[in-house]
Image 1 (cartoon, rainbow, N blue to C red):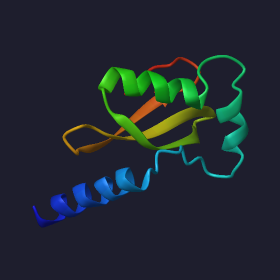
Image 2 (image 1 turned 180 degrees about the vertical axis):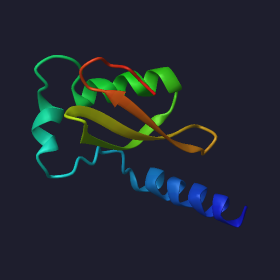
Image 3 (image 1 turned 90 degrees about the horizontal axis):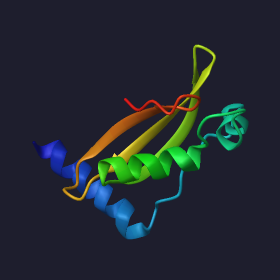
Length: 95
């Protein structure tokens, strides 16, 4: 339980610092995050997930899995819980 409080404190420090920018790694995945041939952009995925989960995205990155782009989004809900959601760039499927 001691570590759960530390995680919430760290999340609150991020909020206080105003760190809401999406951190996308500077790799080959950035091009796919900016303009997929079809499907969702990273910004569209962030907006969709924030609305669906009523939480704020604190980190977002695009990764390639099996030749497909997947957006990995870390969210912070109003209760202070941090959780991860993945979005398929092409289909928009969320899991």
